[in-house]
Length: 393
Image (tube, rainbow, N blue to C red):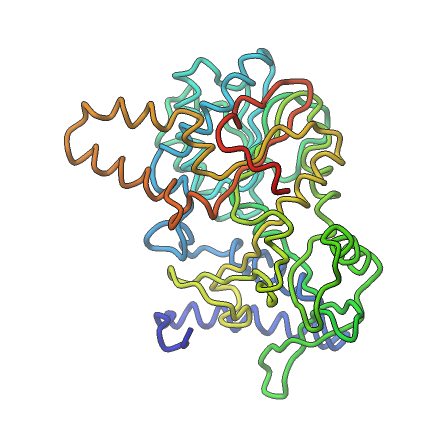
């Protein structure tokens, strides 16, 4: 995409980006390069400067992208419908643990829906590393929810440190995990690093991959039953099993539910996708230059759902199901909600139908976004009764 098609940042935003870029250059100067995963970590999460740590709007029409919860309550209501039977079965002392609370829209809509379904958790906990987003979430919760529901919402700085029961939910979280990038050169696995050009701009360079990344790439090749082609480049997150264990390992009874955009492994690493899945978002424009305006744009990589299935099962959970977002929503109350909306005024019904189309149509979020669930000590398979895709894993 031609840079001239991007809206020009405000002067204060440019100064913000320049400050982060200088911090990254200082770190690069120590060893000459940094792994791309470290660069992604800094541009997204550096305290006070990273994309998710600073105060600019990120979600909705005024931000850089729109997530499903920002479209309205329909998404959260269907997720609540899927999770309510689990929370009711677990009964006392349950926790709904949300990773990355966004604007707080999902928490508010989900709690209101769970209240209607008689499945309100004892506590609703949000793990939110961004102080700015946490403040926005708190304001929204207090302004939107009835006091008895708002009192159940708490914020965490770390995953739970003791055994707990309930549900863990993450929407568009996995795609924002800082990921290594690899490239095949002369049959060897190299890792993409970031260096500084003579003019101070950031550029790619290649370094030998460490043992963890190298063995993870070879595992994927073995699973695909063929080696990657020369110069094939993509993303791979060898730390995913450890991350799953860290955030869900102490969930001794309940479910984990992940929604994100991605593919099963054979599609993720298809020969045609030879430059990976990395995508950047700035003011609702998608492009592939991660070095443009560091700190002002979102960086994401699609999810390898086969790797997620391996990590969840490796952490001791039962695989519950895998399907498209469209199938998941339709299988968990979307149709019934649209049918009930027929009595609404025309404007409201039209708005609801428009949101439903964005959530489910193949050209929108319906097929690109997928949902995967895991269970421990409960049955969660009914949530995936429609459109099972596990055979593609």
